Image 1 (cartoon, rainbow, N blue to C red):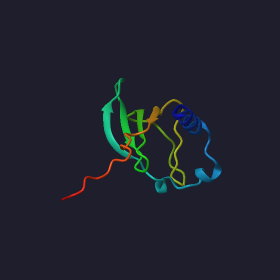
Image 2 (cartoon, rainbow, N blue to C red):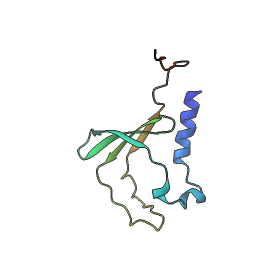
Image 3 (cartoon, one colour):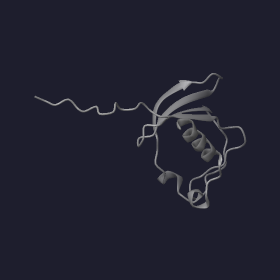
Length: 106
């Protein structure tokens, strides 16, 4: 069940955005929270850990420190050249214990 969810999410990331999504202003999209940053295995690369503030999903992104791109379009999007952006891996964040309640105060 969980594997299917990740497979569907991975395929969705590879599919082109629908026209409506492409016309959304980039600056108005919701943001994930950057939690940590690590040195990558190759010089001038980094690994970042991002958390979805809504569902707690954790994503690790491996990318170069710099990547050339086109000037921003009126909606704020840029185009990167082939193979200049790294990879992303996501997994569910820590689950809260079922039935756990906040301790009552005396």
